[in-house]
Length: 306
Image (cartoon, rainbow, N blue to C red; front, side, top):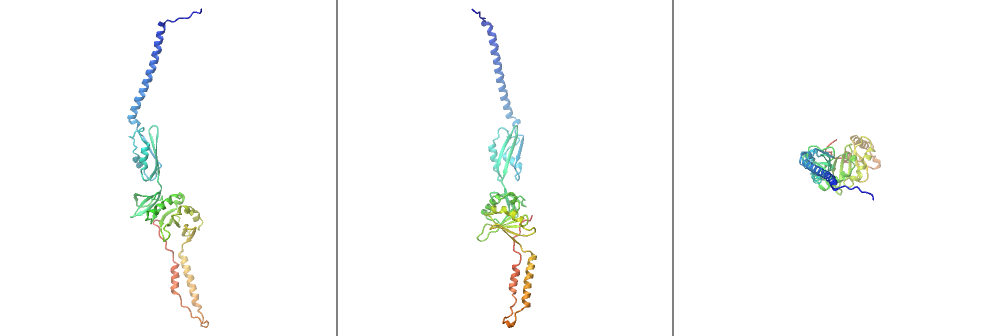
């Protein structure tokens, strides 16, 4: 038989004790490491090291960045990890000029507030001051002595229904076309309460209807490009599209001269008595009426001139 090597229990006990001691030491180191990280995390969260350091506001134009930051309530004393971004988002969106807001955190201590502002459709004048009209037709309480150049002046809109409808139509316009409008005057007529007159930055006037404004106004640049430079008049786009030129003083003088020549020819060749006709008396009243009719059409003056 093959002989087996026999190890006594006395020889094996020291090795078992050493193995157990190594396992216990590793377990102790692991527990101490976890405890250290927990203590460090508690100290970090309770110290100024976890506060917000940098706050950036993006997307604002009319609303100051400081006002948005104050509205959110985020400061350099705000804990970076304890912020409720949804709650802060609702605070920022409560501003009447802000339609959307988002709050993003960037490790380690940076916060970015991004906003989208409601579009400013125009300005209305009241008691010598101008007030901003938003895209929903509402008016801001903030007043200014002069209108901004970012939107046209809306004049004569004393009924809120038509003002809101006009605001909605202006919002649908392409920015390239909206920037050409200086003023919009509401000029309702019997049977047509939606009539408006526009004063454009290039000197032309436009007659249109509120109901079809956003549909037909985009064609204005191509219509204006076909007109001769220096001409003045009204572009009608409410029913069809055509141009009506103003009568200039030279045209009035020419018309008056033609009428005078026609009158002199009639006086120089009176009908003969042989024909049995009596000479007609000059029609002074008709001539006066024609002279009045040849005057320039009455056109409302714009509130401001570019």
